[in-house]
Length: 86
Ligand SMILES: [Ca+2]
Image (cartoon, rainbow, N blue to C red; front, top):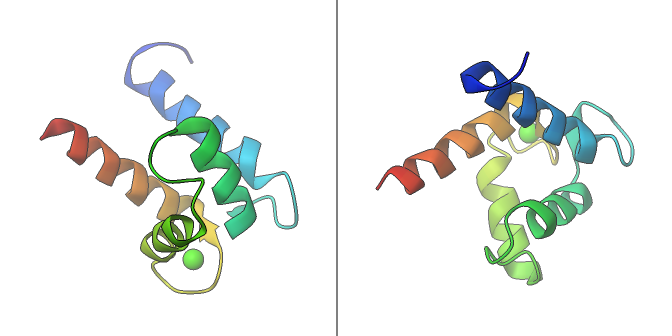
């Protein structure tokens, strides 16, 4: 799988796995993992400020269970895509 839309999806999954696997449950992003991901992948969105990270985390963690799973992450990526489209 490379290039095109499927390639993009594979990259999204790989990116999630890379950060989600750094501590605890490999299927979810903790707030710490999300912070690292924001800083590395989307510099300039406020990953340096704890309140910005908290805001992002709250936005991503739709079911409020304290971790971001793959579905919640994909919703976030789709939201980013919509922002870029405007
Ligand atoms: Ca969640």
